[in-house]
Image 1 (cartoon, rainbow, N blue to C red):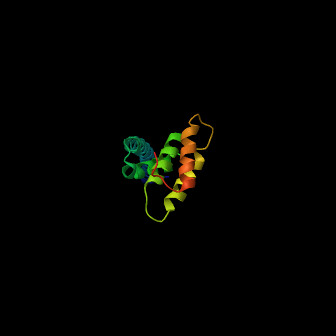
Image 2 (cartoon, rainbow, N blue to C red):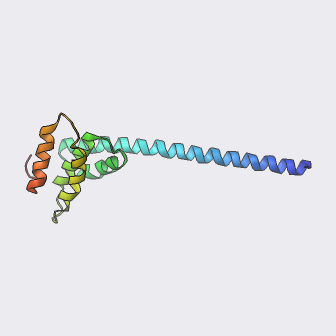
Image 3 (tube, rainbow, N blue to C red):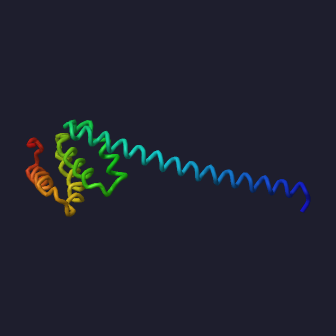
Length: 128
């Protein structure tokens, strides 16, 4: 192998290594940014939910729940928020049912679960 071929091979290897490092860095930054956005959405959604702003809590809670599947409080808050956002055709009841069923795992907050279950069965979210 002559000197010119060695330089080209070294340049190719360097470009491949740099490309791989850029891909790894982009993946790391993407994951970090997604975690940050999930935390912010969760905090924003739970704050709006606790204030009773169910319309303002729906999108942030939806995004947080889609990316953080194991949060009991998050699932229950989303189900209650979705239940209280009316759209006139009753689809909110079905949309609230899945997160509510997920939240039926063993937890000490049984009264809250039963209240939400009763609201779904009754088909209204006007009660507090």
